[in-house]
Every structure is written in structure tokens, then in C-alpha cells.
Length: 236
Image (cartoon, rainbow, N blue to C red; front, side, top):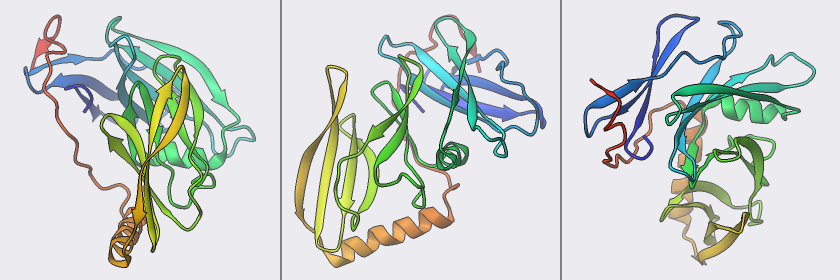
């Protein structure tokens, strides 16, 4: 659910799925044209919704390459609600295998200020240094370097006042960092810092354990009413 719109995916069979954008506030929807990513039923596809800086809603489709290939890659397709069509982007190659696992699992995707961010799995090879991001303006992948907070801290990524934030907590200390985009550069500012308590730390440890075991569980999202799709759409 982004900006009052819900991306709905209905699987018809192993080879096909239908996508639509639905605005529950005004009870209108629009069906998306068939995604041009069609390499075969055995290739997994993932779709995400976001908004670029011009206010154009986009659906990003990823088709993961062959895990057995010597060079890992992903096919990318972008749907523009403004143009009502798909565009296929050049493949992104030389992807570390652990990032393939992050995209494939759809583990904790966060949309924030025109970009999608993937929270790494707790066993990811780059958990303590970077996040994987996709800029909806440039329509490109990149790595976002995280602040150095110490390996003893558990890390949790979330939205704080519309900005991407990171909570680091250990048995004795807790800190929150907020990302600030300034002149095209992504900077991290320490928002708060203080002492931690053991019972609070153990609560977050339990959350990590649950994420390891049940990372495909459903998530709660905030629904914001909007008039997107008010014109040129069909009633549900």
C-alpha cells in the first residue's frame, strides 16, 4: 500500500499472473498490461509499488536469473501509471548471491522518499554494512552504506517521520539513526542515544528469532486515503 494505492497480484497459473492497482478509498482500480518479463514458468518474478519524485506511480518487476549461472543477473521492467505501459531496463549483473536471496524472499521491503529498500536477512553476507536499494527516479539499483554502530547491536530498519531509520540495540545501549537526503547524498544522523535494558534487548532478540523462522508472515500496513485513479480508471 503506497500513497493510497494497493498493488494486487492474482496468479492465474504457473505462467501467468494479473496485476492491478486498487484504490479502496474511491473503490476504483486499473488493470496493468501484461508484464513483458516472460522467460518461463520456472523463473520467479517479484513486483513492488512506489512513487518517483514527479508523483508518478510505478510498479517495478524483477525476474531473477539462473542461480546456477556463473554470472548472476536480474531482468527489470518498469510500469508507469502515467504512461500506462511497461519498459524493460537493461539487466543488472554481478549481483552477490546473498542479495539474490534478499530479493527472492521479499524480506522486509521499505518504500521511502522515492526508493525501495530491502532489509537484509539476519544471515546475509552484507547485513552489517549496506542495504540494497532501487531508485524510482533513476530506475537503478545501488547499495546504501549503513552507519557504523558496532557488531554487538541488533539492527531494525523502519520509517520515522517519513524518513528511513535504523534502530541499534544491545544489552547496554540503544541508538536511532535517521537518513537525510541532501543534495543527492544520503547521510545518516544520530537521532537519539541512551541506555538500554536487558528485558528490552531480549524482546528484540525474540523478534529476530521469529523473523528467521517466519519471515513469510503477513505484515500490517498503514492505509492513507487518496484520490489517485479518480480519473481514467474502472470501478471495482
